[in-house]
Image (cartoon, rainbow, N blue to C red; front, side, top):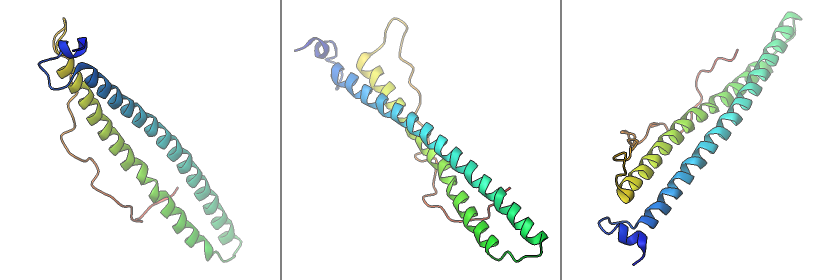
Length: 150
């Protein structure tokens, strides 16, 4: 038997396998952190672009009305722009799911480390508790709603 297996005979998971599994879980949590950052940055830029377009469209509508012109196309454009902003709510739901999954994976990695490596001089390893709810977001689709653009 190798040394890692001999040190860990009382557990179901050999030490090297546990360490490897823990590394994979931590890599997944780091990937989720990067995904969260990318998603947040992209949604921030998208939101700024939509709000900028909305402001310009409202200015055009006001100028058109002040000059006595007809602005039939503007309400439809505002509705389409509002629908696009509604889609930005996806970022909030996705962030909640990413955070939830990240906590679950970290808890699993901590539990594996505690079981495989046992206690050290400082005592038992601290394990972050997994979220109690199975899913933080129950909504699985986006419907257009009332959105007010400023």
